[in-house]
Length: 254
Length: 156
Image (cartoon, rainbow over the protein chains, first blue to last red):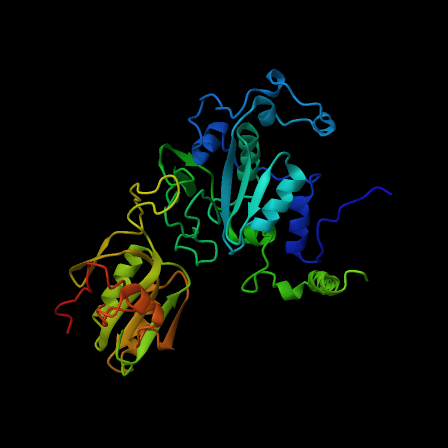
């Protein structure tokens, strides 16, 4: 019987969202239209329209060693062209952001190729070849995985995920990379992810309302959301894993 | 540090406060009889980018600006999350609640009584600031900071 991944336990809405985002057969809902140029500006690795700097010559031009693995694995476009490895990093507010670091890493591993994600408590970074990164970043920003107010694109000085929100509903950002344009109701980035001012504002759309956020969040939250303890199936599985790893830690032969 | 003999109150709004809201609430608090000291606490907003490739570049931030409290300029250095007050006695508390009710209309807040200011220097304080540091300032702001406390004139 072919292996069919289950992605995760749980009977709550949060658990269902977690599975949904991880499942590559689920097409992520597209909510906004950040262009390629916008993504390049937000990340700040190269000027829009500039050629991709390279770390090595294209694979077609260099002698590859005779390696069975290299024959099996098709290189990504970025690897083929010899692009540099670059990153995008996100911070997600605990107040019902659609994604959170572990979820991002899981879903990226299921959906994308040639990536190196880094998961931390308050931020998640993903590294890969530059032109692949731009493609992936566009998907991460334009779809239901992102909310302009509760998720931030932050390369450095990421603090804010666990703090109260500002009066206008934006997550705290020491560098205030994005601001809410009150007239238009749209969030616009005025700095790139490392905090350098942008020549041109990048609009990333309207913040989603609370109802949408609570329906799409992947974060358990006992204040106003789904409490972790209310998902009995989730608790059962976490306890099972905890118990097994403890026992096997002591008696690996059993 | 402070003498532990005075009652203290902490105002905890549900949201971090905009400078305009801080200005409004502080003007109400500062004109309330019986408030000895006001401490604004929150997330620091540095004047320059502290980390990363853009380190040292200016950091313009809409939440960092100068507000007017009782006609005096107060430069905000944090995105205000807590307002801690030291009172002469417990009498001003109802007036403070009233002030909060009138200013925090869009979101809720909590007003707690307790001890929120340091009354003794800790080992870390000695390690950080040494034995010569001004004792009145420890636990409220960085004793090495050149800008001292702001004294609001003529509110009584």
